[in-house]
Every structure is written in C-alpha cells, then in structure tokens.
Length: 280
Image (tube, rainbow, N blue to C red; front, side, top):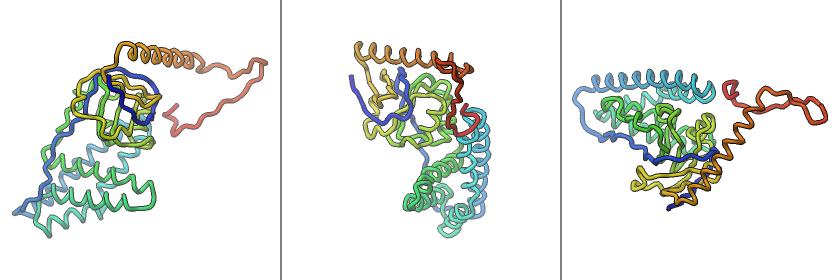
C-alpha cells in the first residue's frame, strides 16, 4: 500500500483505477518553408478552427456548469482574436520563413513568460490560458484531435494539470475523481470539480509516477490522501467513511424545500453565496 498526499480541493471519497492522462505529441520544431503566404493561411485556418471548437466548448460548459465557469472559453476565443498574438505569429512566419507550429509555440512561450512576470495574480494565471489556446492551434496544425477522451471512463484521472478545454472534453459524468501534480484550489480543474461534486486533490508534486497507471486507488478528497493498492483495513475504513458522507448528503437532500422554522416556532431566512444562478 502506498499513501500519497496532496491538497484537498473538493471533499468526498472515490474508489477506482488510476488513469494517467496522456496527451498526444505535437512537433513544434522549427523548419524552413517555401511559401510564406500559404503558411500564414494555414495558421489562420487553424486559428479559426480553434475558435469554432472553443465556441462549442462554451456551449457545452454553459449547459453543464453555468455561465460563470463557461466564461473561460469566451476569454480563450478573445485571446485567439488578439491582434498582438496574431501579429507576433504572422511576423515570425514572415521574418524567419518558418513553419506555423514553431511560430505559435514561440509566441505562446513569450506571452506566457510576460504574464508570469506581472504583479497581478489574475494576469499571472493567464499564462496557462495562452499555453492552452496555443496548444489547440498547434494540434489543429498537426492534424486535429489526437487525445482519445472516450477511454477516460469510470477512472480517477491523474495528470500534471488539466486545461479547462481538456476537462470539459472529458465525460465528467463518468469521471470518479481528479488528481493533479500541480494546480491550486483556484485552478480551473479544482473549480470545476467543486461545481460538479467530483472528489479532487491537487499539488501531488512528482509523486504521480508512470508505474501507478491502472492500479487500484482510493482518493479521500477531505484529507488530500491518495491511497494506492489499499489494504483491506484501509479500504473498509475509507468505504465506511464514504458511506457516512453519502448518508449525511442524503439527509441534507431531504431538507430541501422545507420551512426554516426553529424548535420554538420562529421562522428564519437562510442565505447562501453562489457564483451564478446555475449553481443552485
């Protein structure tokens, strides 16, 4: 049995096989091209295809998690339409007579560095966004969709981190839990996990090794513990804890719609803070 520790971002206990998230390899190595105009057209076509994909993701997220969480895909579309971003890529293709993939990657890294060096935390977080949209364009330049999202069913997903677009392309109804090496309580994966009620742990560092692929695991979202190949006692203890959590959750469900009356007959109002009406 192996116990790994991270940071809890959403409570709940889940059990299932651990699946490491595998991205397809994209080649962004620089090479000389002959037809600069054709290469620019190829980039623009990939960029426009990426915008259409992001619009589809926005509509999917809007229906599933509400406007506030879906807004990230609107932001990504705007980033792909940013003149500075486009001009940087086109300029490199023209000046260096290089392929679009390398121009996109160079621009992505330059912009990400610029965002990381800003003082504002919100702007620093945009580094991940520009890398995400750039990878989408690069993927389109390399031939389109390469990640088989359908194989991540009924598993606990382990990844370095998950971009918003990757998370929404997963069938979240069939995901048992999220485990990430990086990320924080404010990462897109963590926020989505809380919205969907999926147990999640972040900040595992370098503990998620390739040899953990497919092994039995229990994730305890309340403590941030990931137990690999649990022994019988640990398994029984955590499953009993999960059953108790589910019992309390069902009990709370029975209180929905009930009058808020104290034992002495006084009616009170109960308020909560939500991000959007969909969160209700």
